[in-house]
Image 1 (tube, rainbow, N blue to C red):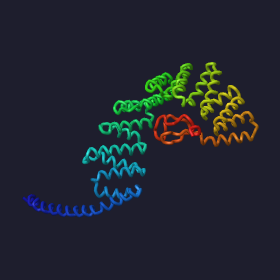
Image 2: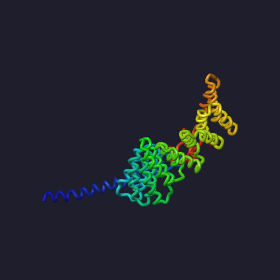
Image 3: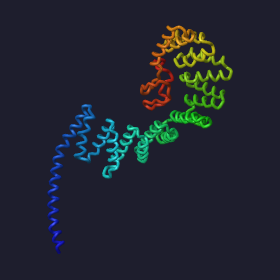
Length: 387
């Protein structure tokens, strides 16, 4: 009986307390509703004035006042990422992904942003896991595959890159034959470093099957053939490259000359080098040709070839090469030595290759641009010759 009376007394008290708390909550909401537009306006003003760093604090205040503003969470996460606050961006987007009260569309958007967070932060294993989750979403499947391909290229996981590329060819209708050939060539180079020439030969065969006109695959096939002791096959591969893609002659002319010399056909090698100097005239061809002609015909004849080339196409590289040869002819001439050294030092500024896609400069020729990730974007000529 006493317990029942206790409940009769407690219920009105609890009701009154709830009513009082509701009033407080309503008052707090009213105050927050007045503060929210002000904070939001300040954040937008900062973005409009191109000061995204300053917009973060007002938006944090808005999110605190109204946690249901999902779109603003996305904006805030992007601002964190751009400012380099990856931990905060990841935490925010993870929170959205794990919330059960948001639409699936917003969860997918948060998962996309989380993948970008991990990529920008260099956490590629977590980025891969995130994009694999996105593969299950039909609308994001192809973009997730492309993101995974980028990760595998960065991580040098070439077998996985080949697998994803083939999926994109089938599902998106993209032509990735050239890229896949590069991936096989990367695998071949790894095999060569391990002295597994048979496996390397298998990889370059797949590369040529996928993209028969690939200059890199042809060059790699010749190098592997030479390692296997088949100089004639190497010559066929390299001659094929020079015939199909003459622009890549600078990358193979020295190899062809060496192979001919090893087969006892030095006269043919000399003729090839002189013809390459006359027809191409680039700094790379000159470098490959002159050091061999100097050894095979002597410094004087090599110097004459450089003088002829300098007359046809004046360049700092050709003049530097001529002075280097003269220094070797006159090792005791201090003035010649000084001039040759000075020219070499200044010539290094032009001993670079430039990506035609993003403008990235590299000190040596590369098939893959580290700046933008493009393949075949470096012309096989130094910037001095391109200009």
